Length: 146
Image (cartoon, rainbow, N blue to C red; front, side, top):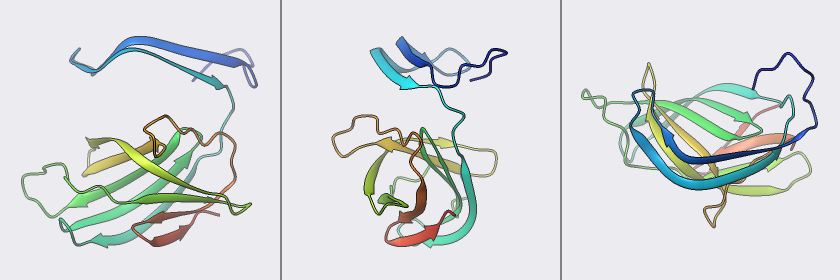
């Protein structure tokens, strides 16, 4: 969120009846509401090279921010189809707390695909906020994010 005013620490609410793509196609039907506190956030990005054999995928990047975990990769599929496989993802905080995240979406990127993980085990949004994330585990392989 960009603002000329200092909005750090303000409590905010986003409400929507629908979410659409850039061409106007509805992708999520509402109504829904999300409450959050505005923070500058601490995004951590790590380039990785993890082969996932289920669909011959290569995971190339992990990004952790206050809104979840984004995992980017490429498929060996020449049709550039999105992967059907969704890996198990867990974040581990510096204090030892572990959170299992579920994937909320899979989308195409310029170089492949991206999974977005920001749901808890009950499919509720699980924002990471200001948690100090030490590492991310993808299908049991752990990557240090410090």
